[in-house]
Image (cartoon, rainbow over all chains, first blue to last red; front, side):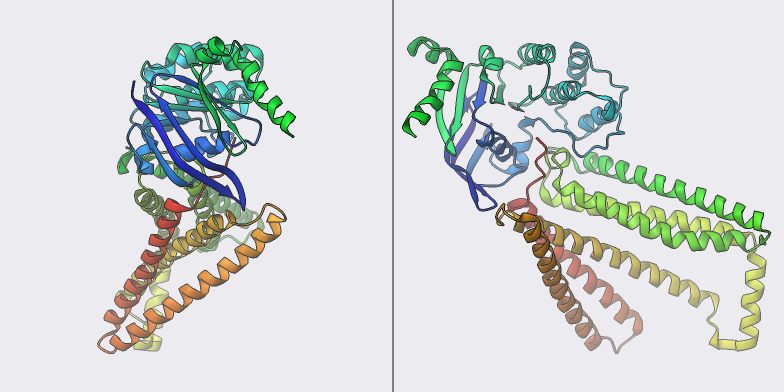
Length: 236
Length: 260
């Protein structure tokens, strides 16, 4: 396995507030990684920095590429489609993806769309939150890249849709690609994970193998994650 | 990496669709206005041309504002900024597609104007010849009128480019600057920041324009054509400087709007 993501000495402030400090992180290829942390911990920010839509000091390398435009061609990040008006038909958005991303696999997208029951003739405005999230995930996973960043893919959606999304992640994950899933509800994704990265106190608190947590510490991931915050509260 | 052609196709398609909507509304407005004139009993051979001409100014302004809004939002939306393409190409394609979309509206407006003028063309020619007979060389000949129209079109094109590069620079400077403003009372601070940035940029651009005009005046004695060309080149140089600064800001400081 090779390193797919390398983050070194990353520091980021926004509006005079420190969000991330001295972040160092290395991820290998072929893993499903849980990026965990409370609301506002900096999970989304870290993903945005990796994709290059936000800027910080420090070094980020994805699949050996450090230049922002090159990095973008190795990362597929959940785009919340804010650039498209609500009247846009889904097939037009698919066409957009097909045109601007040379790694976009239409066949794979069609399979995913079938699997997730997405009706492409609809307009964006006709989608429920869950269906929009499914559509976004289908778009994100249909690119053939080394690193997928799924930012809170289960946010505000029902349990059936969650199951569909989890199944689609398992089924369509390319063997050598790494998928990073951010969430603050660990129970939903713990069974998926090979590794966890916890952001706490503006930095990476821990980066551990999921099996090691289960075997060495005798805890499931959810309990381990909660224990990090209990310790924090005891210290307070 | 995304090619110039593919990204161009996407942005051009979007702006074309917007401009087609503007032009559709324009045609409906002309039709309704002509119908209204007909109902009021004021219809004559000039009506089509007069109505088309009066709507064309509003349409051009609307098209310019609509493109400007789209042009600027493209810099801060994830859907576009996630595309693997260099910032320089991104900026150039955005500017080029906006320019082509605006030129498209101008050409269609010209065609509508010409078509409506053709209905009563002979009368306009007769009036023009009459004025030539009455006032002689004080009335410019057809060649001079065409030359003036072409020069005006060229100036309009250059001014439009300069307007977009200036608006983009102000927008990107403000977005970059807001990263360093505190969260508290950020709306008031953002407003102050906007005013300060707009003032500074306009002063700097004004200074550069004066510089261009003064330097062209120095060379301008030889011929009016040479003088005119220097002005145009000067404006384009100012636009190019603004574009370089904007690309630098995109590359280092400007973040997209967080949509999650």
